[in-house]
Structures are given as structure tokens and as C-alpha cells.
Amino acid sequence: MENLSKSMIIESNELMKEIELKVFGKYGFTLLAFPCAGDEYDELFDGEFVKSVENYLINGLFRIVYVPTVENRIWKNHTIEWKDRSNLLRNYNNFLINELLPNLFRIAGSPSPIITFGCGESGFFAANTYFRHPDIFYGTIAIDAFYDLRYLCGFDSWDENCYFNSPLDFLPNLQEEYWLIHLRAKKQVHLIATEREDNFVSIEQNKKLSEVLKSKGITHNFQVIVPKHSDIYFSWKEVFVDIVNKYF
Picture 1: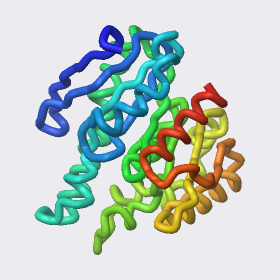
Picture 2 (picture 1 turned 90 degrees about the vertical axis):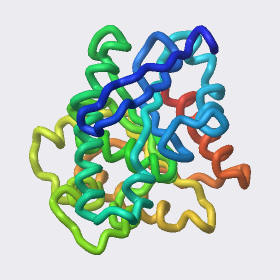
Picture 3 (picture 1 turned 60 degrees about the vertical axis):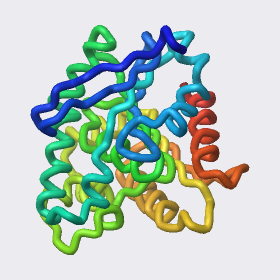
């Protein structure tokens, strides 16, 4: 994979820092991946997802671009006030659309389909990014994700920005035909939860979100899967590979 991987640095004005992208593959649509074990790409964990679909990357079906998240700086950084964390999430969303997106198109050579991907807390970023911008993104793969921002951030307070970054809040009230038309047109929306004793919250949130999407006529693939392995990262990789094999 050495000749199919590279790093790319973006100067982000929104986040006031350099952002390093990890790019795997040269052709096809883009799978925009959010790291599963922390804010930055981790070879030990995220690298296994890349290796698991190596044949698809070599054959040019899609490329994977890993972008850092700010989950630890938001959800777990209790040294800053909730309002500052809310603003940081707003800045991150602006970075994804205003600064990252043009670079993704530049990497691809032209505007091309982008599907978001994430597991656990990073699944929130994947799903939220898609549901906020279904006119830009082609779909999402969210495994054991969370869709109620309150669970992730534990904010005592709430503002409009929090509301519009909490899919279980803003999607039930979505009425504008422009957004519904785009959401109904997409066929690569995968909401997967693994049946584990410690995964009750994610399972319930996935079920609630699936019901919301059904009520609005939005096609999606929702499954609760019994994992074959106890290791959570191995289970996530297994689910990811299964989705790629079946639907791509």
C-alpha cells in the first residue's frame, strides 16, 4: 500500500491549526473516515480498516481519506465551558465544508461522491456530517454511533448550534422539501449497531433514528448485528468489510 498512501497538510483558519489528512488509494469515490480510537489517525486501529479493503483500493473502487476529529477536545475537555465547546464544534463543521471539501475534490480531480464513515463516537461525526449536508454527501456508514449530542457532551446547557448537531433533535422536525428530497434520493445510508451489553445506548439511539427516517420515507439500511468477536475494534472492522462487500 506504500505507493497508494500519502499524507496531506491543510492549513485550517477555522481551527487555527494544521490538519493532516491520511489518503489511501488513488481512484473512485471518496470514503471520508473519522478515526475510531481518538482524534488522530492511528495505524494500530484505523490502519486495520484500510488493510481490510486493500483490494478495493488497489482496484480503484474508492479511496479512503482519514480526517482528524475534535471529539476529545469537545466531549472530554472539561477545562473549557460548554459554550466554547459548542463553538468548537461549529468551527469544525465549517472546516469540513469550507476547507476540507475543496481539498477532497482536488484529491479526486473533480467533484465526486463522498460517503462518510465512523465507529462509536466518531460515528457521530460521520452521521452528523451526512445528515446536515445530504446535498453534498452521498451517504454514511455509522457503526455503533450516537445521534443525541447530550449523551456525548453532557452539556448542562443547550443552544441552537447543539440542536442542529444532534440528529435525534433536528431530523424529527425536518420539513423542508429541499433536504428531504436529497435524503430520500440517497441509497448508501448504513446505520449498524452491534449487540453488546455495554452498547445499550447506541442500540436504542439507532432504533430511534431508524424510526425517524422511516416516518419521513428516507431509505436506509438499519441492522443490529450480533458480533462474532468480543474485541470491539475487530467487530467494527468485520461489520465495515461486510457493508463494503455487499453494497459497494
